[in-house]
Amino acid sequence: MKTSLLAAVSAAALLLSAAGAASGQTISATITADNHYAFYVSDDNGNFTYIGGNELGSGGSPGNYNWSLPEVWNIASAPTHLYIAAWSDNRSAQGLLAQINFGDETYHSGDAAWRVYHSFNDLGDGSAHPTAGTVANWVNLADTGNAWETPFVGGQNGSYGPWGMVPGITTDARWMWAGNPGLNDPMLTGSGYGETLVFGTAIPTPGAAAVIGLGGLLAFRRRR
Image (cartoon, rainbow, N blue to C red; front, side, top):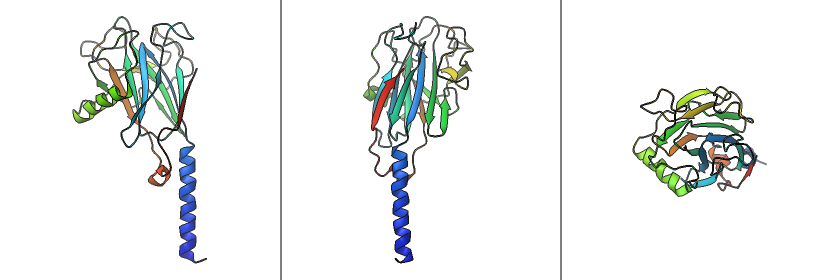
């Protein structure tokens, strides 16, 4: 076999190997919010997919409250961005806590990679989760209007009295919300300012070679 042909065959084998490895990667997202959140992903074609969210009411299932126990979402896919829509009941405290595992990488709420958008479409306790199309529209407005902001980052998991230590999420994760011009800490006083909020972050994507053969979202499931 000529050297050039051998090199081509080797390159093709490496490409197929990379594609197979990438397609087997799983994103595991552990999320909770007071009061409500809904989780979405988008791919490099701008397609948004709704994954799920916490309970619509204030009670947990299980858990005493809808924020007491986080949901865990496992996604076998190659999305380029993660988005979390979050809103409160406007009465006491509010916050978002998350831990995202992707391959060997771990992202936490409060990390510098997150950004937030005020949609000023205030949902309430018991409201249905926004559709993927609604969130896609909000993200487009944030992108085109240069309206993304840096989230307000509070204390670590376990440091706030209203919530205590949420199981399944490390203390590297910090509670976050959007800033409020009238509050020093927007998580400890009831407020619906700017809600519904959209938090977003980009995630590592496979190389161009590995992307070949990936068909977008392959599977997702929810577990407690």
